[in-house]
Length: 261
Image 1 (cartoon, helix red, strand yellow):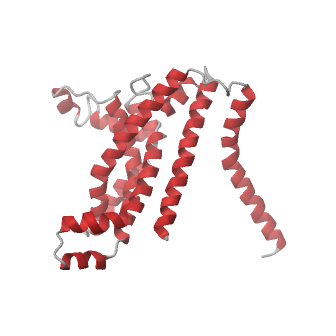
Image 2: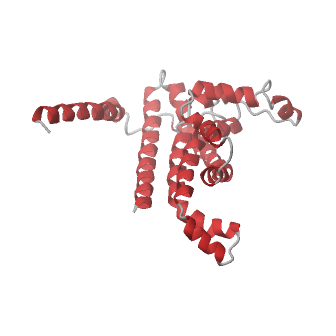
Image 3: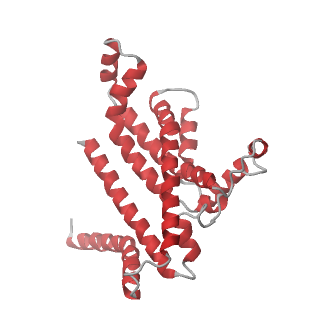
């Protein structure tokens, strides 16, 4: 490669990397420069939002496992009419604007939504509750898990499963003892990414659940709520989320790398 081309490639690559790295460095620099890095401002608010985020994302992950795993298996192994359409709709929340996702959830579970009348009849009002936070997180994050799980299930060799069937194993035993263990790393990597996406969810949550302190105010909503009047609290919360995202990404890449070996 000519020297000029190499220099141009290096320059563009460096500019792209700086565009991604400098904003993260700016968070740390601003906190250090302010002199407030030794004290955690409004610690009780941050702890409350963090605890709520952990509880709701844990519930979201459970929902993804219970409902997303069967769907991923069906999409990976079954062939049926409309399969491509089902897959596209399943992954649509990945690219759907967050505000539209929140609006769609309101029109589905709100008082005047599709299921609103039936839910109100049994005394269940979902919007602006912790349950709304969980539903919003699951809606936007589950496609990441389902997509990874599909890949994991599709990569499992049919020969191993057929050998187990020949030995008399039932379909359930084949799944639990052959398919699931072999696909587990892919499922784990997808689940980690989905959890991180749920932890960082903002747009759909604020429309569907609101930002009520102690009830629906997750860490991302806290950043939005306080950054104009208490920048240090917003930065502290943001750095916690950055640390969580960094650890999650490293774990997901490690799982994916081990799965390739």
